Length: 164
Image (tube, rainbow, N blue to C red; front, side, top):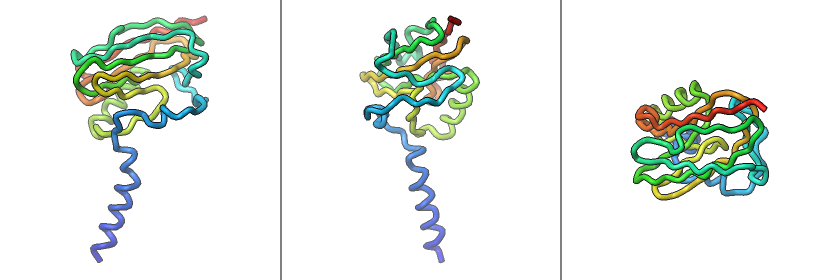
């Protein structure tokens, strides 16, 4: 009788393990794939060959991004080269402030969550990663490190997207 609940829990944990496992790198990002056509409030995944600008972003253990403020034009596709100069894991997640705050709260509950979206990159200490993003709408958007405690410590940057 006890084997059924144990078996059920094993199946549930196995099925959810991928959703809660935090990998050092986005393995699927390394594979060549077409950019997603999913539109977010802050834009959509960009095609690397269409990037018109490269922005180097540094993440530090001082819980800061450099630069902390960016301005881009509506329609611009930006390649972010994100370097972790610290000794702890950091990430860069693009979004609206509301989305980032909600995701930061979720990260507190599930700190090992896997990130594999085109608008986020998880970077090990001393390593670099990247995001290619097309900003399709004007407005004020943000980027943050949502590892528990980092966002709350001020690891946030702002992106001003100017209308065409």
